[in-house]
Image 1 (cartoon, rainbow, N blue to C red):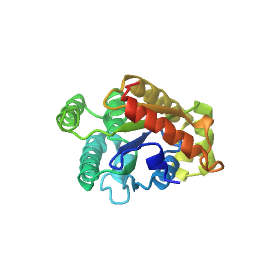
Image 2: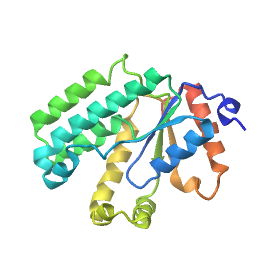
Image 3: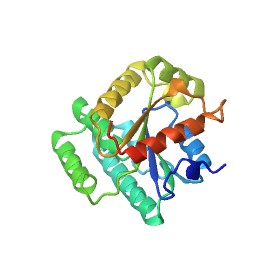
Image 4: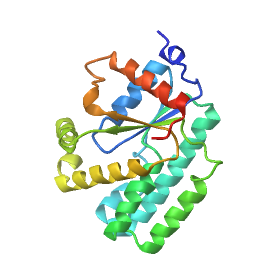
Length: 220
């Protein structure tokens, strides 16, 4: 069954998955790409020259890390469109400025001047008619308890050692961010409404919703 053709998903579409840690972005990315015959685009953290330094000293390296992420995500976005589309992307370029850089600025681990420089560069690169925005951004959401349960279940050491208060803050920041987001059409999916691992048919109902969102061009 050709789900892309059945639901009239453009073959050059760019679908971006957004949401906090543990919400299932990677699983959704793989499932949709497989069902639609699309390429995947995942964040490459293995060759990030700032990540370890950042965790050792937030104040010293937060600006450098965010600039690096901005450059890498911009290049990847450009590459997807130059390739001709047909991608499902794990994490969006918009989350960096709307959530992570803002959090550092709010907490004082990024200076006011650095934050203003970063947001000015982001706006010049991304918030223009010339930047190729995705056809739809899928925002994965769920209760804090459910998300923390998933984080604990997958057992990554760094995440296990992270205080619950951090996940609570990120959950709130994501909800605030998506409520104001308007750069492209948004489809909100609650992670408690489907199970892509146990129910292979669940992906088809999600694709139907993606089709409706893309063709209605309704900003939520």
